Amino acid sequence: MEWQPVLLSIKVALSSLVFVFIFGVAAAYSMRSFEFPGKSALEALFALPLVLPPVVTGFILLVLVGKQGPIGQFLSESFHTQIIFTPYAAVLAAAVVSFPLMYQSAKAAFQAVDCTIEDAARTLGASSWRVFWTITIPLSWSGLVAGLVLSFARALGEFGATIMVAGNIPGKTQTIPLAIYFAAESNDLTLAGAYVLMISGITFFLIFGLNVWSKRSCGKSSSVKGAF
Image 1 (spheres, rainbow, N blue to C red):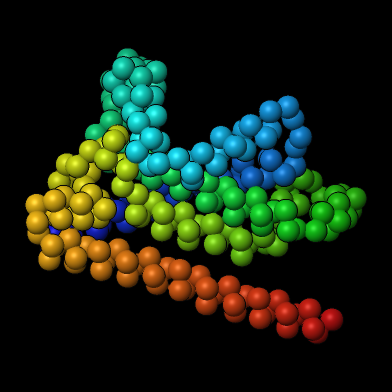
Image 2 (cartoon, rainbow, N blue to C red):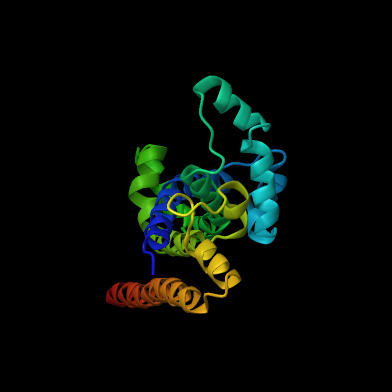
């Protein structure tokens, strides 16, 4: 079994997770804190990659970052580079399809935070930035970690959007799902099965670890509340 698709998938998922976490948390906090016209439409747009077929998402990205797309032309003319059919395209596809999971988890976590605690900190002179880092983030950390794990698992298993914008280039853009598909297509079921076991095992232990951690966190919270 070639280990390159496994290593590339992990690198792509981790790289996409950086962007997903930053933009997911920022978007969720902004949506919770501000009201503005078109907010519902923007939230629906954030959720689209979660419900659209991945191939459709990949096609939209292809139109945007392809050689004839607005982003693709800008990168080509300004920086003499392109994203399409490179590992960066795989990271982009993974980030877009996993973003809704991070956004929804962060949004739910922020909404569960008691606003009166944040307001009390502000009345005592704490800035909004300090309230965010010292109160909002710690109180919503469990939900944020859940979003990170789910987003990583989703990015790890991304296929449809990846094949549209990154293609299947062995040693360059071939991730585990692509390796599974083309191994099965060439009737190499043993290799496809090995990759299936690999990605299934990684995903299982991620979700299992999250569940164990969540139960322990809930138990500690209950113990603290009981002490008071």
